[in-house]
Length: 194
Image (cartoon, rainbow, N blue to C red; front, side):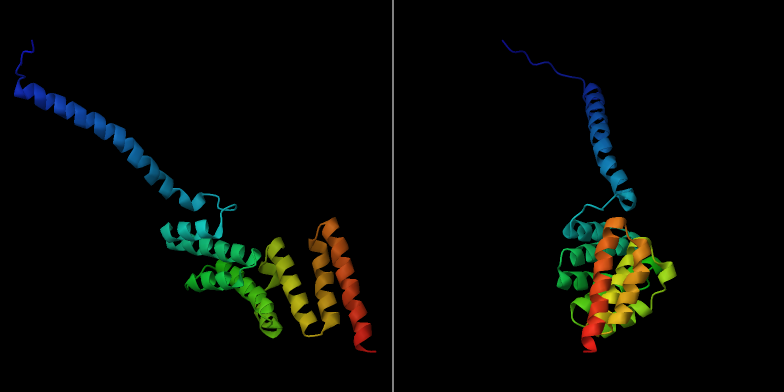
């Protein structure tokens, strides 16, 4: 037989308050953790992220981090061979950009111009950069872009000179391929004069 016992209303209120406090503590921790992760997003390593992941992260980031993530996405798209996507992402980077982002944008625009068959534009864009401000990997890209642009313009000696200047920045295995490319360009000089 079931008997109904009546609980005191103050006991019910105390129990309800305890349940709400425990529930609030349990959900408060879970809710606060993602917020803390969002605050640390700018220092997160996105080096292995896909282009789409970088774009999504950029949409959620503060303006400075947004430009860095978009730049990384544009460079990744270019490295993946998607020139159109790379150009579209570059268009999302708004001024004023930091000097680092401006430099990276200029270098990528030069590489894109070269891919689109505009070596004169690529050369002009690289001339706007100061090689002393470039990191080692950017310096390699800068020299290679200049060399390819000059080669497209049939300026073989100048293209070879760019690759010679690049040589000291390369590893020993990369130097061998670079030497072969220099020799090939110098051979083209002889063919052009025949």
